[in-house]
Length: 471
Image (cartoon, rainbow, N blue to C red; front, side):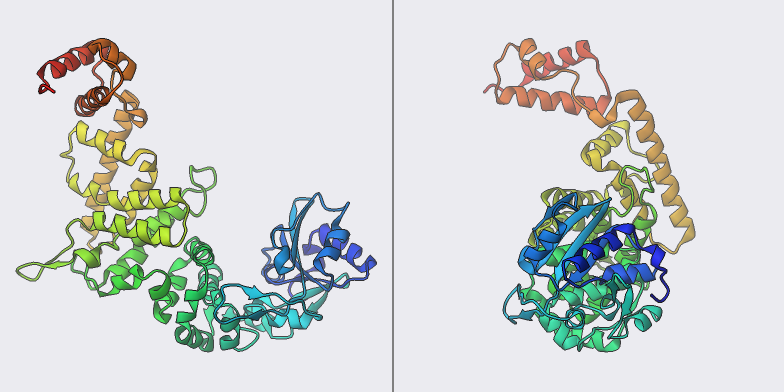
């Protein structure tokens, strides 16, 4: 096998091959597994193609695999776990797609080359026939891998007609692997961008999430925008190209947003951090934090441009878009909240906030505070070095104040000095709206003045109760 030694494959590969050969079936390691082996980055997720039908695959695996699952059996795929490796074995396929359908009509093929031809890109259309480990590369995938080039085994038009999601995959691989995309592929993506609309929102979401979490998402996002695909799946992103940012630099908000994304990636946690590795919520918030600007742009007297309340409008747009893409509710909520909060720090100035304002900042951010720290720092893209340093110092100062107050007051769990049961006992009232109102009053006092202690809180509560308007 060129550029990959046989010893680079785990023993489970040869064990599996022996079982298939004994049963009279052909088996080959295929797709991304071969590509990654050639790149020296093979993981424990292994893909195989076989002449065996799914029911035959299940019989071969019985008694050998630690577990077997058939979630993808309708598409000819049987999954298995063995010695820490996740295996997916798929019967040779010769798919035919209805141009108006979101799903392929799966038909099984008879040859490995036919199966490889229906794959998305040549770098994923290489195989290692087992057990001999004969390298199979009918479409020049090895040359393209060496050139870091994405081409399709069939014509791009044929490939994208079969599965339009492959257009998003081209962008994802550009971001994930750092590959160039063949000009013919780019032209086909632009010409066929409308085909993406027949693909389910869930499949689009998964590809976008992988792209955003790739090492270099700018390359993939730029390709989506340039080909018109972004206008179909994330239209708020290309809309930013028309805007001028509030700093009046020679860049648009689109470029600013990509830079903020890159700077947020640089601030992500390493191994052992609270969110180790790619942080989808932070990255989406960084990319989309300014999408409210097109809706809120105003031209001011004297030639200025303002975007008042774009964070409020942006949070609503983010929620709507991510829900349409079927992102989980917790992701939608967290990204929208970060977008809503991303400008709050800019009222801090040179430290004029009172302790009460700092407490409210922490309270409003809640568990998103570490991400808000990163997003706020990443949002500084000014080329004015003095201004950038001043902003960094101001945020350093705010974080110091947050740490100090957190040590003194347990900011992470800010609550009134009296709970609901104590409020009812002091005022002699049953559960009801008055208890909630009293609780909120004490919470505001807690935020304004810090811990009061139970005695002071009780005095304040009684004064508030006595002064309240008659019901």
